[in-house]
Image (cartoon, rainbow, N blue to C red; front, side):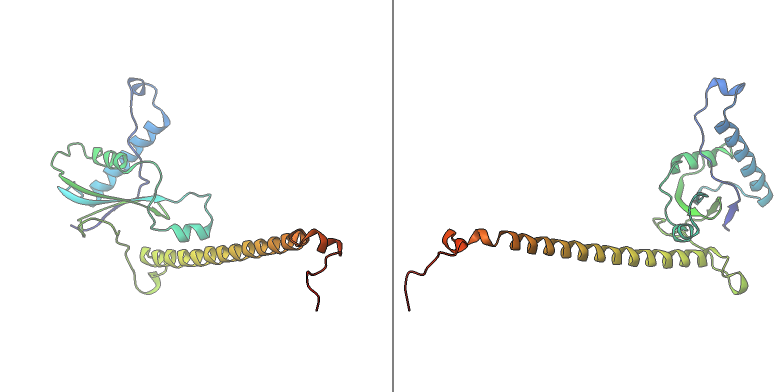
Length: 207
């Protein structure tokens, strides 16, 4: 089975009530628009829901993120809502009857734009999503190149955090040693005998 890509932002299925029949909430309206877009694109691609497949949800990164953070988080697991089970339910419900589906592998990662990729399961546990590489002038815009850039940004961030941690530990050690020395200077007289501190101390023997 080839890879089918739906150019839609994944939306979770909302919990509907009887009041949504005449007064639809914004989440319900957004879900029905999403369902219509998925159906239209599936019909245009000739997509039919298979028995077993790999479902990859690509969540769009927030606009508030900086460009550096977006490059670093590309392809990373999206540990945010909506949950993968709700996303899968909303996608399967777009096709009506789905009792023939018996195996679905689901992944949810960050992407520069929202989308859904459906293909055959390519590995046993579906732990590593496949990022396509392109050659020539299209290499920079390919998902594979962006994923490589994310690895580079993550390595830079780790080195920066490690250097910051080492600097902070060195500063704390320096402050600790300086405080210890000050304490030694302040209390060095208290450790000598009282006669010695007054200057009247004499040894018990004479040369």
